[in-house]
Length: 108
Image (cartoon, rainbow, N blue to C red; front, side):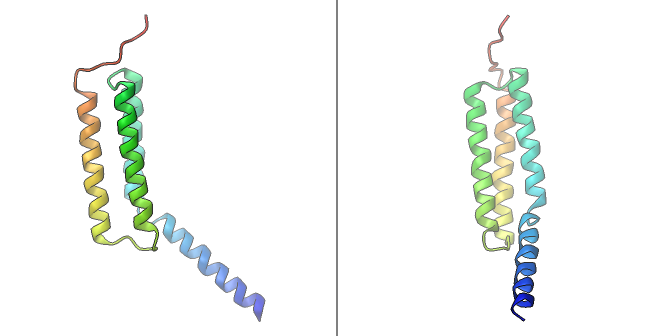
């Protein structure tokens, strides 16, 4: 009887872990896209090291906010809106840094 109960509890925990991991798939996909944009900007020289450092810090902040929102197992509409606002702001910041005519010096 105890083993059945333990197995049941484990299944519930595993099931909730899967739901937890899939709570914000759109946020995760957008984070990957924004990180790729930062990497491309650094590789092309459009984004300086200092700018990249700030942009990456902004991405870490979004990731922390996402983890806090998911901590209770449910992401509310308000939390989703907050994440989206932060991602919109980060996207604007990436675009501004990539197009600000401030390039990283290239080695010859």
